[in-house]
Amino acid sequence: MEIGENCWISAGTIILRGTKIEANSVVAAGSIVKGDFPSDSLILQRRTTEVRGC
Image (cartoon, rainbow, N blue to C red):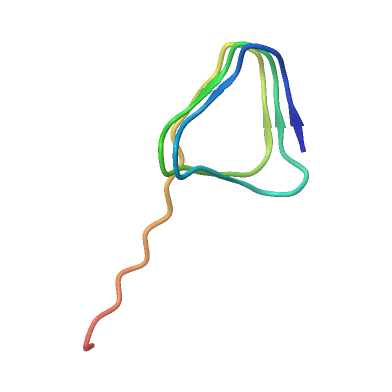
């Protein structure tokens, strides 16, 4: 995992192995992040699983 300078990682964020976030980027709260993101990115990634019949 690589995180550049001046990045803001919000609460509840999960950053997975191999992720690269370049400088001046923001990751929204509760995001699950995987991959490469260029400088000045706004990253909003959420995965939802619906469970029925509980």
